Image 1 (spheres, rainbow, N blue to C red):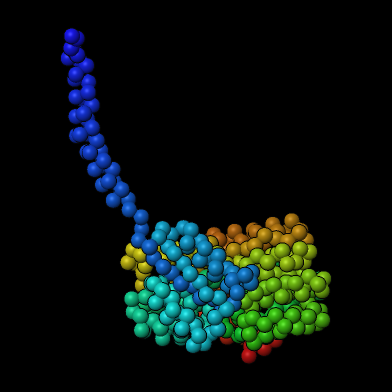
Image 2 (cartoon, rainbow, N blue to C red):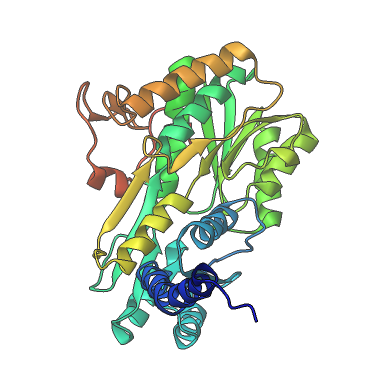
Length: 372
């Protein structure tokens, strides 16, 4: 009878030893590595909007930030509520979010600040980040971005393109952020066209398409051949401008598709990276209640694409100035700055402080209208 040789016996033995000893060791190493690289813990974040997130305006831009966070921050899960009024209703929505597991809440509208402060007192372990407010609490901070530079550049475009030298601006409320945009837009226009003026019509509300259409038509009837505005959605005044055969500058987000002929350019937000940094700071324990402010230079605001009617020489001029803003060689709020009544608020070489900007209560020279 034949017997197996030494080598034929040792082969299976070696394989047995490797399977019993080496494989478990490798398995343990893999398990240890997997534990070390465990995914980030889930964090639930709530967003609240005063209008519809499909408005191609303020709420749309904020919701694009939410989507960026969900895509780019490991563990981030978000929910959102839209069309929430600036009253006690928003407090109920925040409480509902907290009961649903949210530990970070972004109340994005200007009028949500006091309700957010009320809810923050009741839930000290929840972090609140309000859009654009001026108050903080131990668990509440604010975030916003200066879009002034982008509005200045948009104003340059409007000033170069107008034939009547009359620009129209429809605006919701005379709060500092709105006044800054009107003044920045006008300064930009006058930097290339000293004869240009900006006429302001107040709507008294963030969102009322009827009032916005009425205001836009009244501005065109008065001779304005470029419209822009600061309300929640640019859709109504953009469409009205297109129907009336005048040009339009957008705000908040790129609404160029609503005015394929008359669109010039828009000043737009880029909230995602800032929101992501805020969420990550909460995750790693470095968050603190402060006023976070971004700008064009940091990438938190931008220009949209130019419309087809804007000549290349105008684009080149505006983009060259944009480079100056981004490099820091151009300072929008450096004097001389002259108020509507002729009073000089900042002499040549002087720079308005952030406190002056966030408390702005005046129009610059070249603006037609009153600050209510």
